[in-house]
Image 1 (tube, helix red, strand yellow):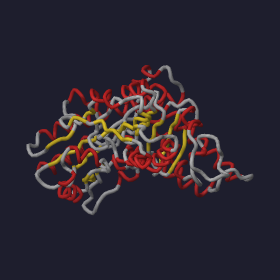
Image 2: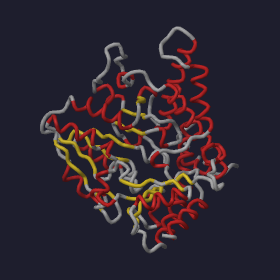
Image 3: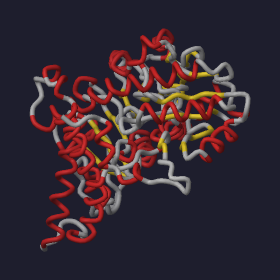
Length: 418
């Protein structure tokens, strides 16, 4: 049976070497993952064979319609949505969320309240802050700086009959923390509030089940889980029907189409379906031990749940090795959960600081052909709350399942040299 390291051969970028014949170490996954060959083939194949706009009376247009429907079905399976018609495509998660905040905002009144968190990417903050111009009050749920987990004990005090929406990330793209979104959704539902879940960082690392969560909306970006640069929105049928979209008049007025402004990124959508097919293959080849855990699912839905459970289990070892190695370097400060027994409460995304500025560390690693991000990663609330925004932010080391333990060892060796 193929192993996770064997999957690397499907990613052309992972075979690239520098002038010193060193393979690139892609620890930049939280900013965007590499793609398997089938995604590349799907994008180029769309341009060659089926490039067209939709709803025409000819072959390429009809094939484009089929591709879009198949991609909706694929994403519905990935989320365990009840129907493909609960899936809308957009340019990226940020653009989709600004669009949805405007649609939802037109129903709000002065004095209505929205609850956000200080652990979120700004794409799930600024679109809601924009509604302050309508008199909407924004309230923030803080997090504990010691381990970068949300202060759930304070959430009850923030929620009231005035709360109209709670927006929260499934996992922090800065600290790797996996939030207890089911708990938050249940608390929001008790006061009649909508829930909007940013699953961008979570999606490459663990299974998603929107029906089990009960969220009203969930958004993610395929380029964070081995697909093209675009965004995907899930919405409950009743939530999608409840809100009117800002759209051109000829556009279909039914959901989810009314939330898709302009011509879609057809080639990117074709690549997204191919990324889901890749993950289904991962489930088939690497996820057999999780089949009984998802025996209530069937077909592609089951394979996807098996894949993501296997990925989460496999990546736990990455988190353990990376954090243990960083803890052995006296000058490293780790932000987030560090107890090895709690690795399933985080993704293998670890942010650190050392005595040198983050930019210096990232540049040094870059010279060794090791790719990491530095700065605030658009998680402005996080770096501000941690007191590091004015000091260059953080160095973020982010792994996904195509990385290896040898790459972690290589990265740790360079950091030890500091």
